[in-house]
Length: 414
Figure 1 (cartoon, rainbow, N blue to C red):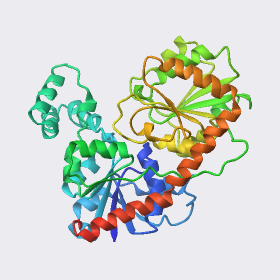
Figure 2: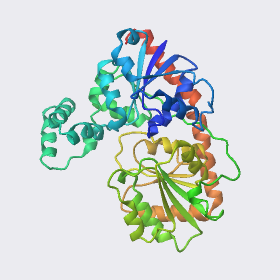
Figure 3: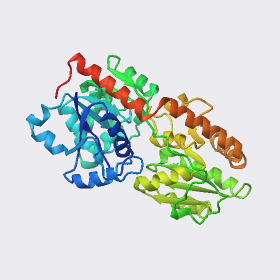
Figure 4: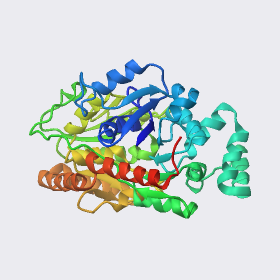
């Protein structure tokens, strides 16, 4: 079986790119596979992939091919060489626009890294004055009610985007769908009961743990005794950082020395620095901006407490950062919503999203900051859980088995 694989890849600044870079070598152990990327600069991708710390492939063959997406689109002969397409779909048009249009023309198996694709469709339509395209998408998903809601939004009314996740067209046209959580699977089946959808966990590579982690240069001035808290990924209001900062403002004068790092690129217009300054937290909070994967790994290794909150209801997506924190044996706070609620209570620390949320954070952070044994207990349980259920070896085998089943059924061939 030969697979055409579509996703962003490093050096593109995307969590899905990093994930696929880690997954591809494992898939290539089972099937012939070529990775198609939306770029003609293959040398940059080769260099970035060979130098990713998690891959250990420097100066070695990657085990799979890398080709520009334009080759696939322009050559019927090349397309005929593949038995199946595998698409990794996310929410950022900058990384997924051409992948999406390719998916619609040449359907395959689609791995939905995010279930709620409303933001993707908003950004690819309304932000470039394609109002009619947005109305059509809402109509496809929601019929006349969807059209009415789209027109209301265009007129300035508020719309709950969770009510219209806009995955319907992808689900309808794809041969099959993969999602990372059982919660997400049920969301898809609620909208499309006849969909061919399976749940395969988000894989994570277990790092070798060291007694003393090296701290990145930006925070290397901190005392070795400073407890390090961290939030990772694209920094957006949905990660509830404002309420974390409010809790930390209450704690800073009463607890052992701590420091909070916010690792990742903030979305446009998200001025967290103003709130940090207003709360007088400049000396205990560091924002790194975007960092490469090697530096990202260093921060993951250094953090003592992870904070991975999400505004509910979620779209059922899984956080790659969360499972990486767990693999690092880092005790991690999550919102008790969506797919995060399904984790065993002993593997993560769940924060209910209600009027007591800030006080919950104050209470649990007080305990974690003052009790090293508690941090160790949660961290060890987290690592044990992902080691058992979410290794790249296990996940890649599940994906290949699922693809092979579709191939046997005969509903493949590009």
